[in-house]
Image (cartoon, rainbow, N blue to C red):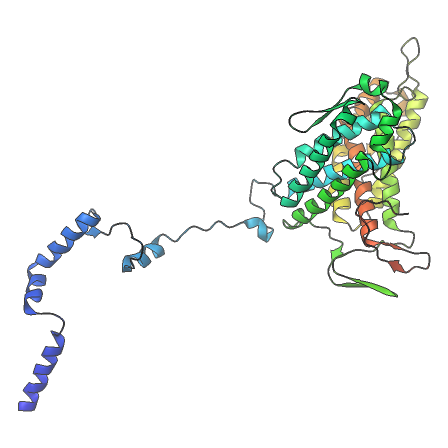
Length: 423
């Protein structure tokens, strides 16, 4: 019996080991609860049920309610859905701005390359460069890319360093970095000064073109982060017979003659023809003393446009390069589709499947020449010229990046500058 009562006593001592009878009494009569409420009323607030709400958590405090609050109100996370190539309803991909920068940079490079190779550099060519330069300034604004911003600052600084020479041929720089050309001043300028600025590998124009090619590459890389990629690009090693290259390479042209060369040539011809129509040169939209147009000359120019347009659509449509087929070409054919009714009025129809054009001579010759002039010297002609130039530049970039097939049918990889024209 003694052992039994000893056991009970020990258990009782163990139960009350951390608490004396005074504390136990205070819990039972409610005074302990009042003390808790008084404490929290000083350090926090009571809720509607009369229970104390803990005060704001202080540094170093670890209370049980911290974890409860985290469960009830978990911290919000800012997910970038575009990282997973998921499109948010009602929004366009933020990567699309880099496609615009790509195209603008390609157009600047194309303009400088064309002037570098041409014989006489006229007002239209320089005016086109000024316009495309300004397009790049606008497109690259707030790009959010360190590489693009750095290259744009380099172009702006380099242009500013040539401000005096540019002013002498009628080109001025405003406070936002955009260019403006004065036609009268340009046409009265010394042609040697124009050539010094835009001809040769060390000229102002060539240097701007080189920096524009760098922007193009950076913009393409940034666009790729949002799922806008060159579908012909793969990783790994590409064997080339006696040599090999490791890393990211571009899909090979599908024919030994170089499919990309065909694309570049067709698009370049289309851009030049569209540009002549845009400028409305006297040889195309010429009128006699009675104000009548030379419809034969107009038909000849538009016929060339249609042929070169179709050649570009067919060759570029076979390309596996995303920026050629799914960006520049798609934009060009979309512009044409948007003007289908105006084209139909002058005898030009669009094949819905092939997206090529058909020119009906009889309908064209019977159409109002003013409608032809307004269509091709307006926004449509400008867009086709720009998009074709972009296709040509993209093809040129891929040629110099990925190499070409040689006469023996072997594929030769080269890693030259992005926009240097292949020899």
